[in-house]
Amino acid sequence: MKSRNSVLLQSVLGLAMASGVVLDLHAQSAPLLEDPPGIIGVAPTPVGGYTSTLSLALSRARSGTNRNVYGGGLEAEAGVTEGLDVRFGQSLEYGAAAPYPRDDETKLWGGGTLLAARWQLLEDEGWQPALGVFGAVHTSYGETSRPSQAGQVNLLISKTILEGDRPIALYGNLGWSELFNPMPEERHGRYHAAIGVAHTLDRDTSFGLSWVRSQQDRRERDENIVAAGISHRLSASGPILGLGAGAGIGQDSPSFLVFASMKWLFGAAAE
Picture 1 (tube, rainbow, N blue to C red):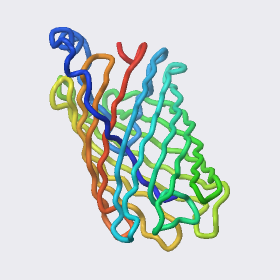
Picture 2: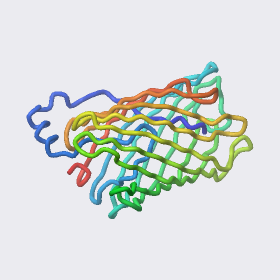
Picture 3: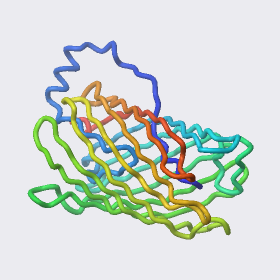
Picture 4: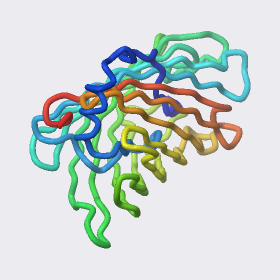
């Protein structure tokens, strides 16, 4: 299935919360520095912490009669031990969403299920960047196609280059995906890479910018997406609201995409 780089769109709620309570909770929280769009950060969910993220997205292809893909998903993370968390994700898409045979004329339902773990190997301290590994198994399926299973592994890196109340951090991902049961048109393996920067604008708002490159199926050029997003925290436990947009570079990349999310924190993740 072509990478959709889906992310996020959800209606704002909680604006009627008592402003005094919100400000008091915010004053006790660390500056917000969310990962840039499409990038997996190094820092895992704390032990005893949990997160839940609801997302919606729209992606538009450059050509064809069936150009729009509408997507949404639910993702949950849990910290299981020091430096290690696990992740479950479930997504749905409507449009040219089936893995194979892909139908550019008919709107179809598709989706994917993700099981993953993230392990942080090194902390960000001194000259040393934070380093981690992310591994996952993913099943994609569509209305007219059999399920397609893949495994992936990613090297994660990040470095805070400006400390304080408005930190700035650099991010990088480098990974490989292996398709277990490819169709003739699909590659057995493909690479993906991403770089990005995140900047805290104020204590509860951060901005992210990223470039993501993914290898596609045979006879297709690599997909390149440049995206920007902004996140805002309403309280210490969330929700953290995210909103962003991106554009594709090249004929086989999306024309544009828009996304939004709502993220809640529980347990140690909200402390």
